[in-house]
Image (cartoon, rainbow, N blue to C red):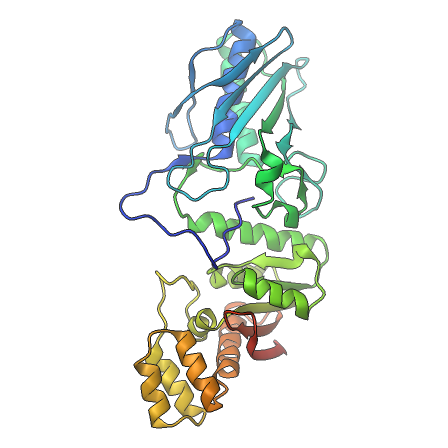
Length: 372
């Protein structure tokens, strides 16, 4: 799946126009085409060009080609552009062997490519973690090359990634039951820098795995600090945790149509304050803390005019929390209840939701117990 980009310590988006890159599926497709072409022609070219689903035609230099009597193998170095992708620079290789006519395209996981062990993903357990779109792309280029040489495209395709097992530790794969390496991903072949869609897709796959395993209680957390705190509170299996990041809406809207019985929704005070005001994208660049509204909440809870003025004149939500704590105003619990109301509405009351609010050190500062 995609790399694990928790919001605490997340990479900063660079200024200016961002350069696109290529997915692991795109690179595996290019390597497969180059290897199959060499197997049929008896020699490797210096580069390979493929056509992506939307018509783009990237060209890739080849790395460490190997040609034997019964197989051909070559690598492509992945360029993720300006996206902070953990697979940027990965050496992705494809080895192609002939199979008897009518065998179809058979996919194997080489070193560094994971195997699926849990249901709920687009690929069934026991299969290499090569997603459907890359499989289709690879089968397509094999058919293209075979037609050029007047032969059949039936072949065994083994995809490997140098160091993939180590790279996978920085991804969601271990949690999703993909063992031994990374996944070969991508629907269009193109990496769009800082793509929200990629993260939300991983959230959806995580929920699919939770449901397929029959797990009735899931936890969605904004980052590693809150996740560690929830781990201490609830005895949940690792795969039951959803790395929500800033995408509360991505979690809640998917659960509306693919519900579990119970959800623990946990986050820092600032992000939960945004959710309490109805913001479903909690990123600092796409939603802002309303300090005036926090001041109004504090006043409604019994805070005096001086406290309200101090909150309005402050810089951050955490400063507002500290001021309220000193004054004995339970603003954390108020935010938890309001955020829970928003979450229940967005999920169409299809599941019970517990809302937990933490400070930066992982201390619980507000909670709203499970309710539907």
